[in-house]
Length: 422
Image (tube, rainbow, N blue to C red):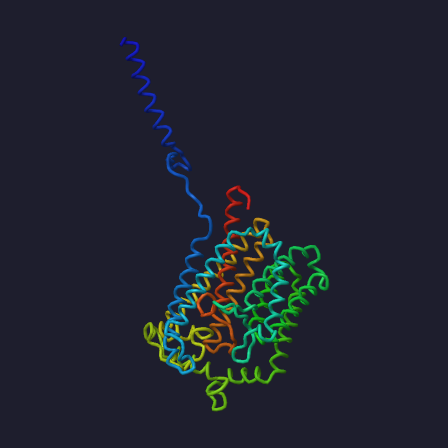
């Protein structure tokens, strides 16, 4: 090899090393500070959807599963449930979770544009099911209320589907009526008539609790959709008057209110105030730290519906004030996060998706507030379950489907922010 060739190879090696170093690190000086950025570092990947929201949901589901077992394990000792195994309710609850998870995964695959097209049809289907549940030999009655349709492996409650259907329909309605939202009769009356029809069907079951939740969801979406404030307060006043008349004109609803005001009186302590009084006893026994998982006394045939409407009382007794605050904190974080996803969608000019997400936040937040308020004696007794935690197949199913739609909204938001197409 000649001297020229050796010199050429040496210079080539020098410059190749210099090029590699320059490619790896670029010095950047900002405000007098020298920064280095490594180009070879892998890019930060944005998660496909809100994983924190997913894991909070999973935590509530798993805690609910444990509490359903704890609250129902002793029920077969009662002659009324003597034919059931001790694991009867928890096994059915696990089956409901599996079915709900599959439905949620499928719902996540559906684009929001498709949900928007399906909204009116889903609303019609929910109305047909609400009518069908009132038909003898089709609707299943429990404790004087006809609210379920038996599907063999589970009992389906059409009012749970109605919550989701009204939510989608109200969001779609506001998008379609955006140009006339300042005109009361053209913007509000058709929606008010639709909710009134749903309300009449629910009151025929009767299921006033579901009607309250649906009314609040619809009103919330109307307000967030930009309906004139004066119109909104008129609607709110009409709703308050309507529910007040329902209570005053119904003797057993009036009795519930009186029992709520004084559950310890001789007249109500063994009647309408029985559940509330024993719920308060459960919270009193729990104190700060609780009596420990499985240690509840009130679930032993004292507190009716401990695994459904009054599951929070069992949580309060077994986990104490700290457990109650933990549950409230998880639901507050979830509601806040869902509302944030909705605001993000609206900021991206996706009004339907934003209203749907915020409607789900209103649904979860309001129903949780009602259930916990009833358990604590802050509100009159009402048959509403604790979302994601109480025993109930159709409620768990629709809760997870609604949350899957929210995760889909967040996924589409992130896709748009990365420059893709929703």
